[in-house]
Image (cartoon, rainbow over all chains, first blue to last red; front, side, top):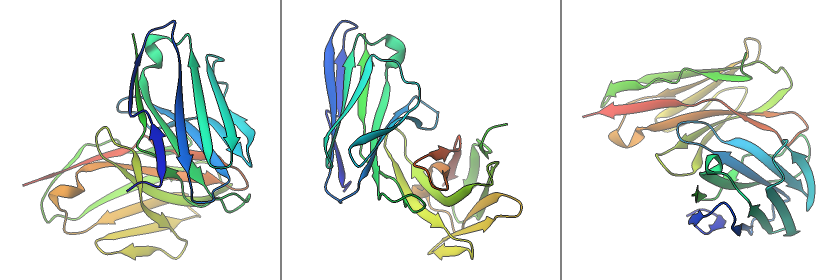
Length: 115
Length: 110
């Protein structure tokens, strides 16, 4: 059983919709991540939050908006997406501490389809 | 040149075979190394971390060669359930950046 929980597991949305993906972990990890994965490709980093502050934004379009309300929660707000944004969105967490972030723990992912 | 390179495969092997995957990385600031396994339409799951001295977990053995900047994974006595994509992952020292290889597909055949 994964210790990182993502909701919803599946989401279908139109290009004008606004929706959010949610992620929760209770391992005391202080770094949380959003990755995007297309079929037959490796995960691509989107955002990293460290101690609830945005640490890395990999030049992600503004139609994706991350939010970290507290150390256990990570959201990804979606607005005006394009069909090419359809993908598996993976949340992950790791221990904090530069030089020793340890392994990544992934949630099961949210499979997004944009019509 | 990609930061982390893997042979995409697929590797088709019979049950019981021994199979080895290699992964090369280009950034000498790489500090931590991992092998993840990903089943179709599922999330990546940690198979094993890779330590400098090499490490073994049952049928799986991981090796790290820092001088040549490569990592290997050896699977002995392959099972049907080992069929998956194996991702090599490198963490850069002092950062939250985990670089993923493209993955190597393994199919174990009955």
